[in-house]
Length: 258
Image 1 (cartoon, rainbow, N blue to C red):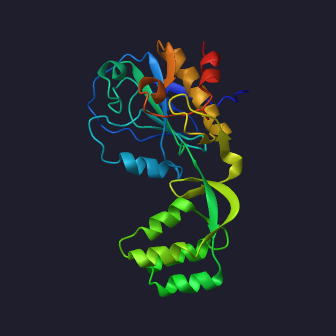
Image 2: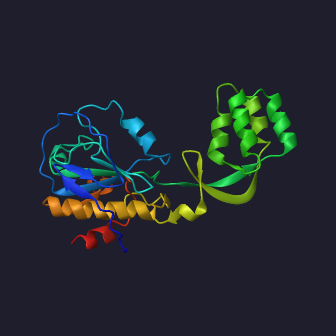
Image 3: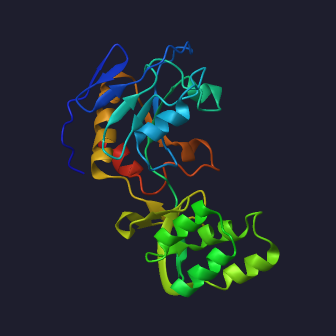
């Protein structure tokens, strides 16, 4: 990958640059000597503000050092020489800088469901709550995932007989789309590839080019500043974890920094 310089700089364990924001809190975590860079993903795709809200109020350093958004922007949450307690293993904590990438991770391939105007009238007769009804109206012409419909028909407000009738009102239009936590994903952003830790997970959300450029440049700066000898993912530390997943070019990144 051809990497355009982003003019990142490291000084006093802080990252600086035009696309860098610091949200460092006064967290008294233990000092470390970084030897590893560990990548993971956010399981969200609604912007870095949402990710920051997730970590808002977190204490004792249970946050990553760095967040990299899909727009390539970098947010620093911890000084680079302080321990991130987001890792369970204490020895790994003492050696690692944790970088979290904005990405929802693995995706579901689902049949697209639709319904007619006549079906919508019947749905209204069954007194579906207004919020859900409004969502269905918006989705009627574009389709919606099977899991969304199952979630709706399993709600406690619907009796079993109503569940059966509602389920009969929708049909598949024999096409598919990909979803992440009920959010539809554009097919251009889908990568089909099996994960080494879970052969059942086959579809992944692609990282953006500018996001990967920021990751490469950050690694350049960290390697120059610290005695970094290992670049890995959470998936390499914990075999039950899938982050950052096969959509992240880990081998290319390692070769670039050998």
